[in-house]
Length: 125
Image (cartoon, rainbow, N blue to C red; front, side, top):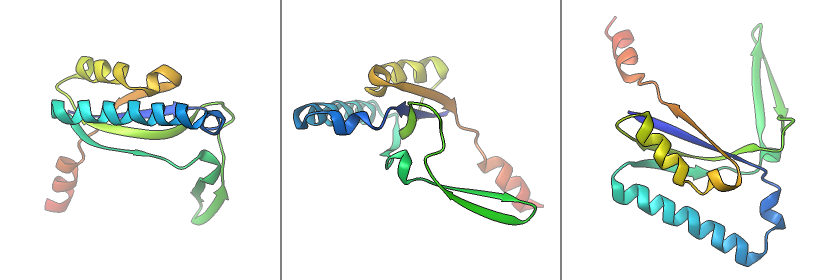
């Protein structure tokens, strides 16, 4: 089963870090990514641009509204994600606990709904 790890943190903290601290942080994520790859569970990951650069699209009654961010009244914003393949939730949680994001923010773990079967069923009709 696939699991999405959504990494939440205070994205303003990165700019407050020294270059050495930023290098250490990046190295921790690279090492974690390598461990996922070597274990054969890695599907993909990306870091997101800061929340202040986000754009929100909302449609109501056929009218589309586009708003610039940020939107959350919280200290933590979605800053990146990992998508992994794991046999069960316990295995996914073990990997999430090793994520550097769990040590300076929050890692939200969600199982991914496999829509390929639903899409195939709709296409067959």
